[in-house]
Image (cartoon, rainbow, N blue to C red):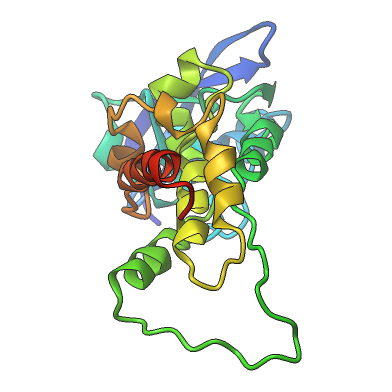
Length: 242
């Protein structure tokens, strides 16, 4: 990448949940520069104490997710020129998660809710049994295949206003995972999933604002999955099961 004579005015959150502030850095502008490139440049050239996460740099792991100019994004796939406000950019940790330090958040609450939503496969066969053949063209299978593309980056969780105002809400990613398992005909206990997503903090807490779907970097539709769970839980209530 070839740098030009211009610089970026970058404001980066420094601190944790208790105290902190935005610090200003001047970063050389480069061709095809990503937000992750900017953060890495600051850590390597201006302040080695800056904390953040990344791994693959190609949109496969989701660990580099941060809030850029108020919007949760994968920073490795976000080009600076697409999000600049003048010559300025503001980078902060993801919303709705505890901040460990600077741009690194504690993902435990996110994964705890993923487990609490019941999206764990309940086996219906033993290893000695033949593998069950499924038609990949069925609507349920197509929707399941789409849902498993979630990489748990928590962008949808950070974008969700319901999560921001309801600490018990399981969140879009956890509920989408529960929906994909519920749709799987190989799962032996769909009622366990219905029970998990029907209670406090479950799918009926969702206000259907759609921020999760709008901001998902993988173009998934958690709001549709949550709507499916709402229908399934109501049907289960009146019909007594799946």
